[in-house]
Image 1 (cartoon, rainbow, N blue to C red):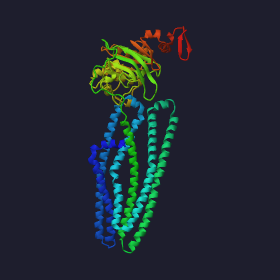
Image 2 (cartoon, rainbow, N blue to C red):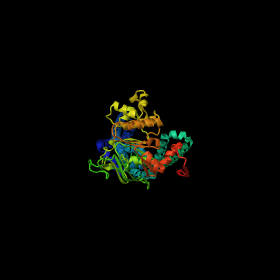
Image 3 (tube, rainbow, N blue to C red):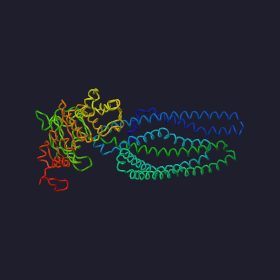
Image 4 (cartoon, helix red, strand yellow):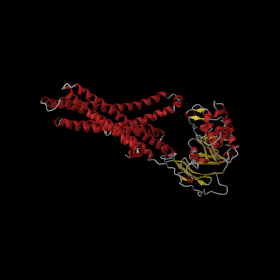
Length: 597
C-alpha cells in the first residue's frame, strides 16, 4: 500500500477538492433518493385524486431536483478532475525527476519499456482511479443504504425484501469482482508486454525492413495481441455474467415485492404510489451495486498501478555525491604535474552479470595528451570511458580526474569538465542551435560556428535552410548518420571541456573527414585531453598513448610504434585493416590468430 501513501502525499495540495467532490456527489445522490418520493406523491395525491394542478406542481419539483442534481454532478466532476489531474501531474513530474537522477546501472536494470509504461499507462490508471474514487466511492454505498432506509419509511413489511435482496446481490456482485481482479492484473501485464513489443518494432522499423522480417514481427505481435485479447475476453465474459445474475435476483425480488405490496395495496395498507417508489428504490440499489463493483475493480487497478509506480521511487541511485566539495582526495600518483586521468587498478562489473567487464585496469594520462582506446567487440572500450564522467562507479580501485577521485566531485561539477560524444548519435527535436547549446547554454553564435568548424560540420549547417535555426526532427531523422555524428561532436566541443571523450563517434565519417576532425582537435589552443574510442587503427595510430583492451583486460599500452613491436593483439587488428602492410613472415596458425613464423 506504499503506492497509496505516495498518491495521498501528492493529494495534500488538493484537500479542498478532495472533500468537495464527494460532498457534491452526495448532494446529487440525495436528489436521486428524493425522486421516488415525489413520484409517489404525484400518483397518490395527484393522479388518483385527479388533481392535475398538484401533478404539475410536483412535476416542476422533479425538474428542479433534476437540475440541482445535474449541477451537483457537474460541480463534483470539476473538483474530482482538478484533484485527480493535479495530483497525477505532480506524481508524474516527481517520477520523471527521480528517473533523471538514477544512474546508468538502475536505468540498465529497469529498462526503457518499464519506465515508459509507468509514466503513461500506469499513471493514467492512477488518474482514472482517483477521479472515480472521489465521485463514486461514497455515493454508491450512500444510495444503497439510503434506499433501504427510505423503503423502511414507506413500509416495514415490504422493506424486509430489501434486507434479503441487498446481501444476496452483494455476494454475487463482489464475488464476481474478487474473481476478476487478478485477471485484470494479468491483462495489464499483458498490455505492458504488448506495448514493449510495439515500441521495439517502431524504433527498429528500418532494421526490420532491411532484413525483411515484417512477417515474423507481425506474427509475434499477433501472438501477444491474441493472448491479451483472450485474457480480456475471458474477463469480459466473467464480468458480463454480473448483469444477468443481478437482474435475475432483482426481478425475483421485484416479483416478491409486488406480491407482498399488491396484497397491501388491495387491503389499503399501502398506497399505489408508495409501491412504485419501492420499485424505484430497488432499481437504484441494483444500479449502484453494479457501479460499486466496477468502481472497486478500477480502484484495484489503480492500487496495483500506484504500487508499480512506487516501486520505481523505491529504487535509489547507486551514485552518491558529497554534500560539500572535497578538495583533499588526491590520486596516489599525485605529483608536481598532476595527471588528467588515472585508473588505479580498476575493476568493474555490471549489475547482475556476475562477470567483470573490466579487470585490473591501471594507467595514467597526462594533461593535453590524446589517448586511443581500441580492442575487439565487447572488450570493454565504452565501459572504460563511461567510468571517467562517472556514469558508473568502479567496483574496485579508483578513477581520478585532475588528482581527485571522481566520487569526491559534487553533482554536476565533474561533468562540466568533460565533453562526451556517445557511441550512438542522439539529437533532439528543435533547431540546430538548441541542440548545440546543450554543450554550453551561454555560448555565442561565434562559439557554435567554431565548434562546427572543428567538428567538420560547418558545411552541413551552412547547406541547411535557416542554418543554425534549421529544425531537426526527433532524434535528427532528417540528417544522415555522418551529419548527426558531426553535430554531436560539435555539441561536446561547444563546452570547451578539459577532457573530450569520443566513443566510436566517427564511425559514420569517411576516412578523409575523420582525419581532418582529428587534426582540427589536435590543433586546438587550450590544453584538452582527448580519448578516442575506435575500431579503426587509423583513428588512433597518431595518439600519444593507445590502450589495447582484450576481454576487459589491458592487453597493451603505448604508442603505435611500441605496440607494433610488443602487442600481438594490436598487430592483428592493424594487419586485418591494412593487409598490404603485413610482413611475409606472418603465418595464421589458429582461429583469428596470427604470429610470426
